[in-house]
Amino acid sequence: MAVSDLLPRKAAGSKSRKQTLHDRLDYDQKEEKTNGGTLVTSYMCSPETAAEEFETGKLIYEAETGRSLPADKDIIAYRILQSFQPGEITSEEANKLGYELAMKFTKGQHQFVVSTHTDKAHIHTHIEFNSTNLACDGKFKNFKNSAFALRRLNDQICKEHGYSVIENPKAKGQRYQEKAAAKRGRSFKERLRQNIDDLLSGCKDFEEFLARMRAEGYEIKRRGKSLEFRAPDQERFLRSYRLGDEYTESALRERIEGTDARTAAKARYTQEHKKINLLVDIQAKINAGKGKGYEQWAKIFNLKEAAKTLNFLLDHGITDYDELTVRSKTAGESFDTLSVRIKQLEGRMADKAQLKMHIINYSKTRDTYKEYTKSHHKKEYYAAHMEEIKKHEAAKAAFDALGGKPVPKVAQLSKEYAELLLEKKACYEEYKTARKEMIEYQKAKQNIDRILGLELSKQESQKETQR
Image (cartoon, rainbow, N blue to C red; front, side, top):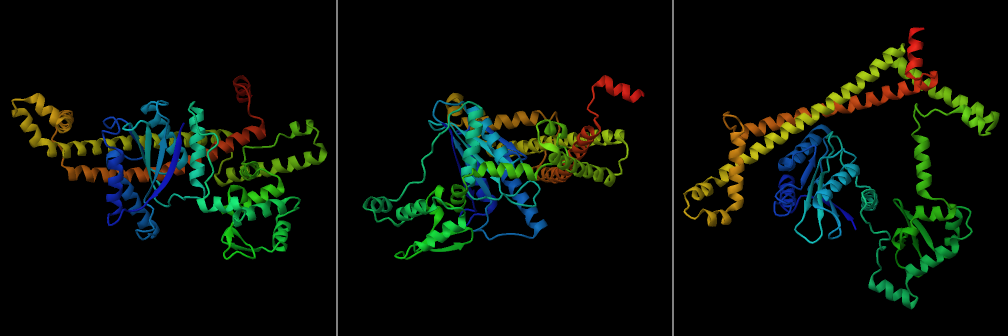
């Protein structure tokens, strides 16, 4: 069964952000843990230079926003740990699931590196994602209960792929003192729970519940978003959420109202996010027996939605359906072109980083390889220095692949990499704009099609064009 965990990271001790990131990512990507480095994947960065790329994003963020935090408060990255039951999954599949989890949890807005470890009985994956987003204009918001949200997302992904999950995870346990006091009947937490359960029954609203608690002798106050109670013989206030998930203010309100918060939230989200392409089917609702009152409301609603589309067309100077079709197609092609360009830049960046790594490895292992070529006991020497020799030979193969071109300097590669990174950032800004335009044009066209009844078959469309 799969489990997950979320950990915010800060700079370690006297180390810098960059050095801390280097240490963590180097550990995650150790060849002996990741099957020679084959179980390492990444998004919008290269695994070999992820620490530099993370740090570059942070420097751009600080320069553009003017915001920075002291080291003891600055979250530089987040680690997600995903573990599986022994024998349940292959290492390759675990890496794919880790990548999918990271992509969905960060919504594709943050760079990340996924490293799957096979050095333990249970396969597990380390995911490090940059706290600064790709646009370098904001940071990841570690919202309340984010670890719980991560667990639910992880469970959903694992179920979709046919892997087991923990169906009923244990709630946070009580301390020994609390358990002992509860057994003796003297636990103030247990007494507060019982009073809340008793007084909550039959309340019409939340204010009536609070009035009943005050009548019982409890003092009530708020600290931020927390609801707190204090009994007459109690020294300190107690926050309700410390009693358990069923005693948070939102949970208490749900128990009074008898509604499922998730269902209500989903309904609110759906209502708030209705866009121009979600028109009401008047005739279907009338046929369902809603009556003239509903018919009138639906007409007004449709007119409002049609007005939004009309305003969009006027703002963009579109008066012809064919022109709208062309612009919608052009916006889609522009988005596709930028997507391909970003992938190309990522590929070139990966090549630069890989060649840079080979140059460094070649320099470090040159003396070892010379000794190996001179050795009269090559098998024994190779066994003792296998990793260094392999790195040196891989570097030589990379240099041979240059086709006779001179091997570039590390400083030159670093400069070219930085230029590619800046170009990728500029492309990403255009990418966001192109994506927004594509969605707007496509929605407008779909809406016009529905309003004017242009969803015809190909033959009907051709007849209409000829006429």
